[in-house]
Length: 503
Image (cartoon, rainbow, N blue to C red; front, side, top):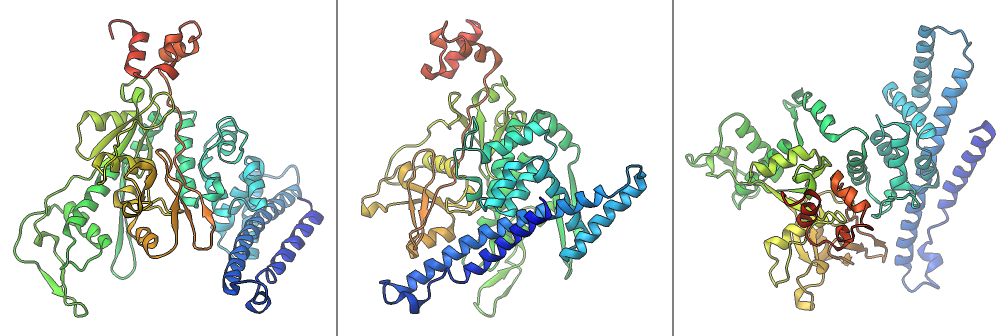
């Protein structure tokens, strides 16, 4: 970006920010012609906020160009015979100058330089979307992070999947900018794991060697303890600890679920376990009069099983392919890990087989007044987390709810059910936020009290990989019509035809 162009862009941004001050209609100007002037003012503020976010993104794109432009111009002034130590000193000087101008740390300035370089040289679609205000700076950073260690072709493919609607395998869910950054990161990571040029099995084998436990002192006599573990172990520990913490909740328990979870984990790791004990060792909350139990051993608690959904492509479960499975609340895991979970018969994990034709889960629900366990499992698989826009509360913590109440004529079917965390369940019943438009494979969208509609963030199922022999048969289906998977209702029968009578 040349200096004159940069000055012009900066002037446009300044003018746009100044224009926001006159966007919002005040009650005085709106009262004569608008039936509800306060509603008009509220809508005007929302419109201004939306436009301000777009300008914020455009400003971030301008910062990217400015930081990269300064670095490029400074490097261009270097003599061609500059020594390595001189180049290193120059890079340090560039980072220091940026840090001082922006009033940030040198670490932050260095990260900005790296991100700016990637956006300008490797991720043109992301930078263009940022300039247009279709993505936030947080989304752009996620794209840079998730394309790290990918070659140029892999980075371009990931970027095109989410940002190019004309790409052969473009994402069908909400636009990337319509997802909160954390949800976008999960989606980008899942796609990256499935399409990475190196097998997830090999990458997992390398990562497994890095497993560790970390301890970091903190303020006020506290400390952080964290563990870097294989995904199945970490998910199992988290859900089992959560289930045990829930079992301790009750009218006389003053601790929050978060506090109980930490206490349970501490007792388990220290080897105390859960055993019946003497009367609770606790104190009384003077405000409420409740007993605050301070010793989890004081309450007899069994060690409950915490159920985790494992979505396994049927051919991967059979060992015919190595494509990733999906662990609820985590994302893609190696097929070998999923096979081990199923083979061990772990009561904490429930397998969900997916259709080999389109990647969608096989149906497990039915209709009834009360929501049966099978249908609840399907809702967990469909919604994955609370269906409210941007909520990341995982499926294990949520409550199934009728979109249209049974008393108002609603049915107990997947098209009339949603999975909400307690907070947004309460929001639905106490405000005019309204869920809309669910179906078997798509959670409901939401309409706000102002009339704005926010679409659902449904999972974008991908057809699973086929074993080589079956793929050859599909490719030859014109000569062998019976092998067309579009007309095969039993995948085992299709495999048997490929393998022969011995199957």
